Length: 105
Image (cartoon, rainbow, N blue to C red; front, side, top):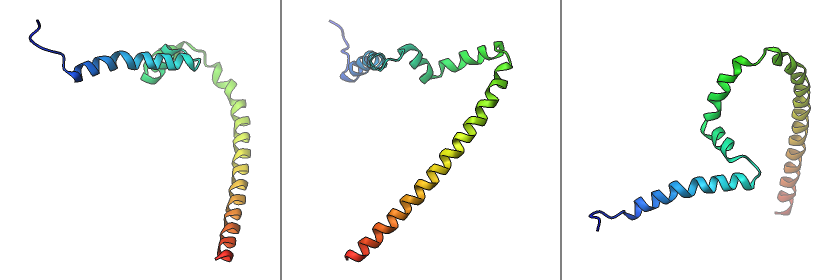
């Protein structure tokens, strides 16, 4: 017989060390993601790999993204204007509802 028993807290910690990674991998797999790459991206292990790969890439990629940024800038401006209009409409609706509330009291 062993002189020491495993405490309930130690059993709990050992169970969590096994259960949590399995649950994470299962949830990632069910969502259609790769559990290993998902874990690497969450822990930051993938970032060190990307830093090592960056010097090998040609600098031509930066020139290709310039036209996309112009299109995305216009899209963002349009979305910004749309959201401003939506805020004004909602502010007006709030004022109208406040006036209706005052009239009801």
